Length: 237
Ligand SMILES: Nc1ncnc2c1ncn2[C@@H]1O[C@H](COP(=O)(O)OP(=O)(O)O)[C@@H](O)[C@H]1O
Ligand SMILES: [Mg+2]
Image 1 (spheres, rainbow, N blue to C red):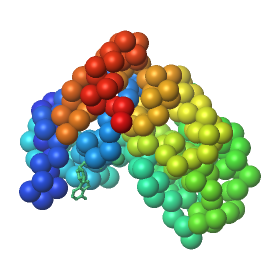
Image 2: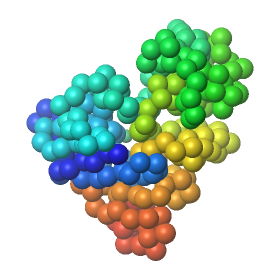
Image 3: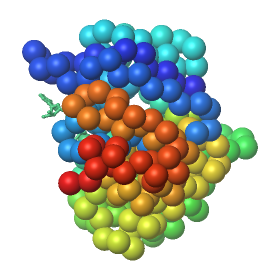
């Protein structure tokens, strides 16, 4: 589904990603793990074309998308749920959701597995209850659910989710993790950045560990559990 090959990304003269290579098969949930400031968000921004790679290849379903603009990447079927959530504060929950639709027709198009507004409200009853509330009045958990729901109504084939549980209360963390688990089980391909190791162990089928902009290790949750050296070097504080 997605393949990065020798990707190098810079902010000005600052070289942040060094030959990053990773791949996601269709239907997989893959986690990108690492400490703060190692390049996880930059990897997602690079895939989306928000901070384009200076060298390397990014293939999505076999097509090289490395020079594509963010709107082209989104239209091709990659959704992004950014760490900052990008909720419009003066728009209602419902209006924020409408922004996620790629066309007006998408709102009610039926099809197996398609995310309509109705299905979003079913999956996120809290959002339904708050559909007329302004973005600025939402709690952190509600904002995160709205950010995920807004990306889902664009019906991406691959969704990139950056630190979805950061700063949320434990009960809400469980709820958001459950939503991501359901999305994955329903067949969507997921690339997840998440600091809570327990969530990654539960949700991810494979894990990449990144440090200083370089992929240092990859394997399954079971392999990471048994690899204290990798955890100590790159994950635990
Ligand atoms: N807009 C930016 N301009 C310059 N440097 C940046 C910018 N965004 C991030 N960086 C730097 O790039 C590195 C990787 O950041 P980031 O990808 O956000 O890390 P992570 O998501 O793993 O915490 C850090 O050293 C950070 O300071
Ligand atoms: Mg980040």
